[in-house]
Image (cartoon, rainbow, N blue to C red; front, side, top):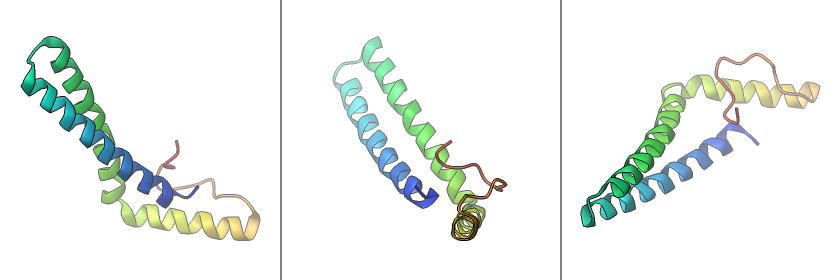
Length: 92
């Protein structure tokens, strides 16, 4: 799977995390207790983690694109991906 495909999945996962955080917010508004607040914090933390990952890719989009191109060229010529990258692999 290419990093671009994984990035698209990360976007969808972030959208789902945002939806879950929204529902946790609504539950917290309806019933303010420790359980609802802990659920809200957990969902917001998951959303923050996903958005941080997306931001890292967007801040370094040129480097990710070059690494993706190097992987594609290496696969075409040698049959395996390059070992050295400027950016971490998305699936790691």
